[in-house]
Image (cartoon, rainbow, N blue to C red; front, side, top):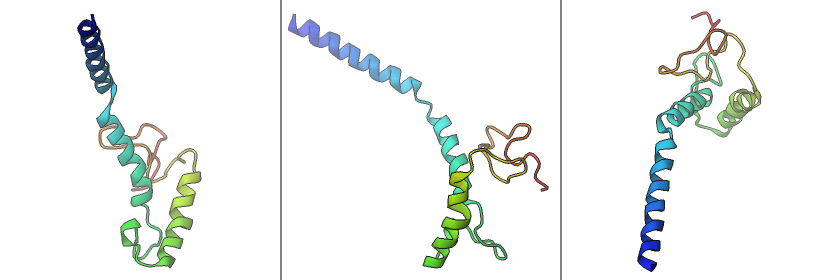
Length: 105
């Protein structure tokens, strides 16, 4: 009786774990991370020369990044037509009027 209950719980735990692992869409979450992180990492906070997140080297650079890139990107609820970035990726390209749809590139 105790062994059959333990086997039943063990089977349930294995089934539950397998089902949850099948439901996780790791490649989709990876695509979302790449699309969102590019909003912060690839937008320059100064121009001529373009300086991005990886070029921050002083407290004034941190302030410039926060005021010119981070806060505006956090407050933008929807993408405007012509923005250089969007929730697009090579696997899921931008649709009509999304992301960089109207950008002059």
